[in-house]
Length: 191
Image (tube, rainbow, N blue to C red; front, top):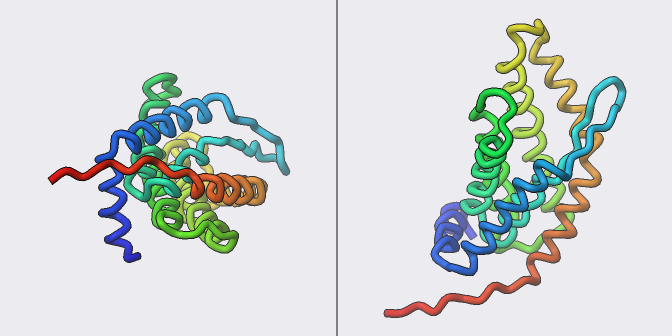
């Protein structure tokens, strides 16, 4: 299936009440996991934050495609900030959530969830979004007062992602396989 066809088919998922309900529940789960399913581990002098908030985004990508997954990623960040703001709102992390949803949606929607596909999509998301973009957002936010270079933030992000790679890949693969077995009721088309 072509990229444009996946995009438009995933837009069509937003027409179903069942899909909208499931997407809303995944959005709520993304917000809750962002607050409560967090752990910070010390690792070679860096604080590695492990969170489960990526899982509902990946599940939305598997079940409903790139557009709903991008909505879950971006809206989840905005709603999390509205519920418990930590400083000023910064749109960079909302962009991260949106791009993460697009990556997982294009990788998994209407495709078989395989280990190679999971590893490749995780690697693309980790390299582009979680490493380079996140390091850039952190550098933009905190470099004026700290004097740290972009390379320092980038190194910390590489260490953080290296620690999280295996658990995240296993979770995405396992839940992706499980979600492909879930069949939502199809809406009847009336003429």
